Amino acid sequence: MSELLGIYGITVCLVLAWTVVRLARAPRDRTLWSLCGLITGWTISFPFGRAADHGTDLLGMSPMTSRLIEHALIVTGIHGLVCFYLYSALDHRRAKRRAWQYGIPLALTLAVLVVAALLTPAGVGTRDHRVTSVAVFFVAADSYAVFGFTRAWVWNRRYACGARPRFRRGLRLAAFGMIGIAVASALFVVAVALRWGGGGSAPQSLPTEGAAETALGWFAAVFFLLPGLIAFLVGVTYPSAVMHLLALRLWWRHLRQYRRLGPLWAALHERFPENALFRLPGRSWHEALNPRSVHRRYYRRVIECRDGLVRISPYLASLQGDADARACRSPAEFSARLRQALRASAESEPVLAAAIPIAVPDEPSLDADVRELIALSDALRTAQPNGGS
Image (tube, rainbow, N blue to C red; front, side):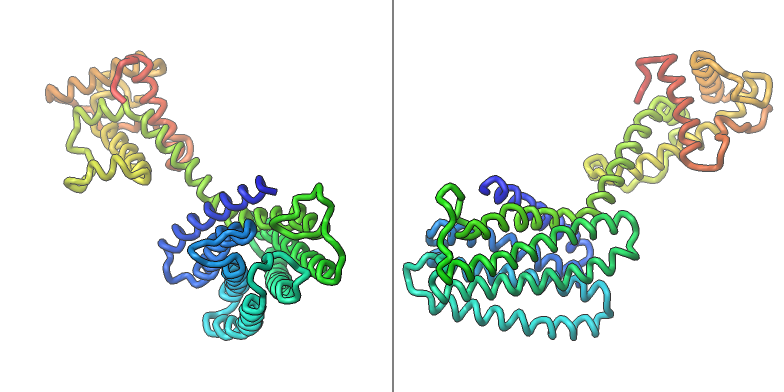
C-alpha cells in the first residue's frame, strides 16, 4: 500500500508540473484550467490525507479538519474533470451554464462534508465508520466520486470514438482509470455501510489504515483505486507525452545531422564567411544554451552548406574538366578536389565554367538534400579525420 501511495504521489506531482507548463503556454485555455484544477486539488490533498491517516496535526489543524480539506479538494477536483469535458465539447456559453448546473451537486456534497466534520466528536478517528457523522462524511464524498467519474467516463467513451489514434489511446487509458476509480468509490460506500452497520473490521493481517477499514475497502483501494488513479493520470498526459517524445526524437536527429555537417560547413565557411546567415547580436550565448535553437542552427547550417557548394561548384567543374561534380566517387578524391577548388577560389584564379549541381538528391525533399550533404561531409571527415566539426 505504501509503495502504491508513493507511486501515486510522484505521478500526480509530475502531472501537475506538466499541466502548469501547458497552462503557462495557453493561459486562456479553459480546458487546461479545468484539468489544472483537478490535478492541483489532488496534489494538495495528498499531505492532508496522510496527516489524517496517521492522526497527526498538520499546520495546527486537527486530523478531522485535515480530512475535510482533503476530501473537499478531491471532490472539487472531480468537478474540474467534469468541466474539462464540458469545455472540450461545448461552446463557452453552454459549457459555463452546464458547469454551474453540475456545481449544484458539488455544493451539496461540500455542505454535507462540512456538517459531518463539525458533528464529529473530538478524538474520534477520521476513519471510524462506526460513528454516524464519519460514515456520512465518507458516503457523501465517495458517492460524488462515483457520480463525477461515471459521468466523465461516459463523455470520454463518446469522444474517443472520433479521436485520432494517439488521442484515442490516451482517452481509453483514462477511461480505464476512471471506471476503476468509480468502482472503487462504489465499493467504499458499501464498505462504509457494512462497517457502520456492525460488519466488523478486517482481519489483522490486512493493512487496514489508510484506504478503508474492511477487507472490501482494502481490496477496492489496492486493486481499483490506486491503479485507476495512476492509469487516469497517465492517460490524460499520454497524447502530450507522445508528442514530446516525437519532438525529442526530431531534436536528437537534427543535432546529430548538424554535427555531421560540421566538416563540410567548416571548409566552406572558412572560404565564404559572408554566407553566414544573420545572427542577433549579443544572443550567441542564449542560442548555445537554448535546446530549441538546435533546429534553427540545423536549418541554417544546411542552407549555408548549400550556398557554399553553389559558389565553389564552378571551380570544381573546372578541375574535373566536366560538368558533373558527382564524378568524385571516393572520399579522398572529393576531399582533395574540394580543397583544390577552395584554394583556387581564395587565390581568385579565373574560372570559365558555370555553376553546376553538386550532390543533387534523387527526390525533392529537405531530408534527401541533407543526406547528400552529409555524405559529402562524411567524405571530408574520412579523408581528414581531424577536420573541424
